[in-house]
Length: 257
Image (cartoon, rainbow, N blue to C red; front, side, top):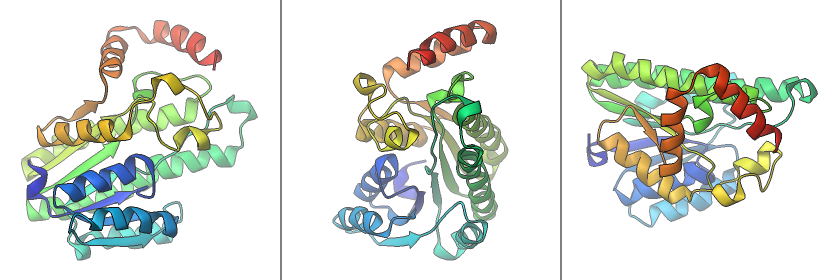
C-alpha cells in the first residue's frame, strides 16, 4: 500500500519528536495532515514546515487524556476524510514502581493504551467501511520484555504491539493495513519527560531514520517494524530467550541506569 494512495493522515503527539517527523516525511510524500497535540505553538511550527511541501495541514489542539476531547477527535475521523492514523502519542517514566506517583502510572495507561484503542476503533470502523486505509501504532523495543524500573511503560507498549498484530489480521481482508513500529532509544523529548535525560545518549537513533524505516515497512506490508539494526538483533534475541532469563538480564541492565 503506497503512502501516495492515502490522502490524509491524522498524527497524535505531532508537536515534537517522532510525531513531528512523521508529519514532515508524510508531507514530503504529498499527504495532507491533521496534527494533534496539546501545545498549539509547537504544533503550528510543525505545520509551517509541512505546509512548505504544498499540502493542506490542520492543527487540532487536544488533550488526549481528556475523555471528552478525545471522543470528539475520534468521531471526527470520518468527517475529516482521514485514511491513515498514526498513533504516536505516549510517554513513560523510569524509576521504582513503589516510589512512583500512581497518577503518573495511570496517565501512561491512559495515553499509551486507552487513547490508542479508542482512536484505532474509530479509524478501523471507518476504514473497513471504505475498504481501504492504514493504522500505524508506535510501540517500542520496550515491548519485547518486562522492564523492571520501567514496568508500566513496558507493559503498555507490549499491549500496543500485541493489539496491533491482532488487529492487522482482522482488518487485512477489509483492505486496512496495520503496522506496529518498535523504535529503540531515539533522539526525541521522550527521555526528558521520563525523568532520565541523557539516558542511552550514545545509543540514540535519529528520529528521521526511525520514521523512514517505519514508513517503508508500512508500505511493504510489514505488521511489525523494528527500527535500527541493533534493535532488530535485540528483537531476535528476545524472541529466543526464555522470559525468566530475560528478566535476569533486564534486571542487571536497568538497575545500572
